[in-house]
Length: 424
Figure 1 (tube, rainbow, N blue to C red):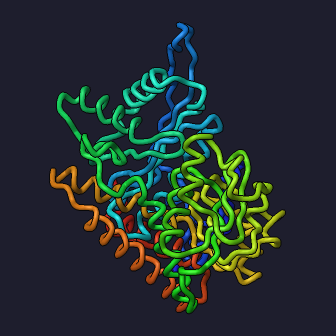
Figure 2: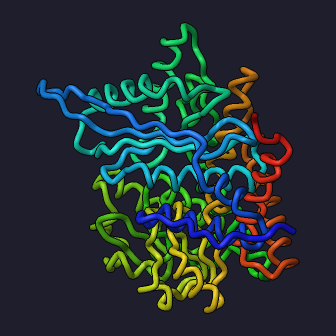
Figure 3: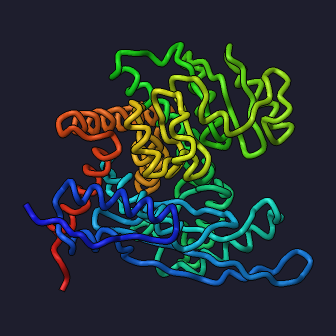
């Protein structure tokens, strides 16, 4: 066994520091030397671009765009495109690294990548967002492609933006390339099931975790923090499976009903009002209280670092299923583990999206599309087999589910490095 390194790999950015800390833990368990650690911690490629936008009123505003390919040893880069004013290069590096392990732990032939622009889409017209998306795509074109780096939606983007990316890329190469992005509209080569894939994956692994503990999803009590694309769909699917969703929150507030929220009615309210606030068939509560609700399953499905040293001891859920990327800090992770909380980590729990993105990429390359039933069957199989493998490894090696998932993912990537060798 190789000797481990004592060299610190740290960052001033909390998200990147958390990702580097998780990697260091896996490296320590695996006994890798410093060279492997540094290779795995360092992005393979990254590009920073200026994204000038001519606003609708004629003045020009410049945004900063990033694309990071953390690792491509197991296949082309794969990762979302995020629009949010807080986006910076360190956040993108952290998210790209998590994508590397996520793709590896569910055994997809991809490496990890991520992109982002520091723009608030709520402050811009559709025409402005189209110009930003097309300019960003043209700036990073040398790094992307169906066999290089495949984009997908993320926070602040959706199938509309993916259609613009695909068209910009295709126009520049001279013919249509559907496989350059995933998460695009069905009419131009998208996949059935992609919109709800992350949420369905969350429910599949929550059910697997409950079943492993001798419990059932039907009748379990669930709190969902974050009622966006992932959280709202997850709440609906949990409800459809017979769970009692008692707490839901978004960026503006939260609602509670101990007998179970009517999720269909809540979705209709959010579609009309833009928030869960004001929903008459539930009690208004503080958003932070959702994280400490007295439930069986907590799904943090909004942003990173919401479970911290300040609130971890107050968490009463017995299972935390991470719908968001990095919602639990390392300190909180330790506290929750000592308190007997089972954490299904993000790189496993929210992998449903990238799994169905892989299915979409395969379908686009074959120009043959699958049915809803085929997508759901394949997604369920991938998620449940990945959970079983992680749980088995955790049991055999006395690890948490997070450490087991990271060890599996990191080892697969390191094995790819070893087998391919170092060039030149």
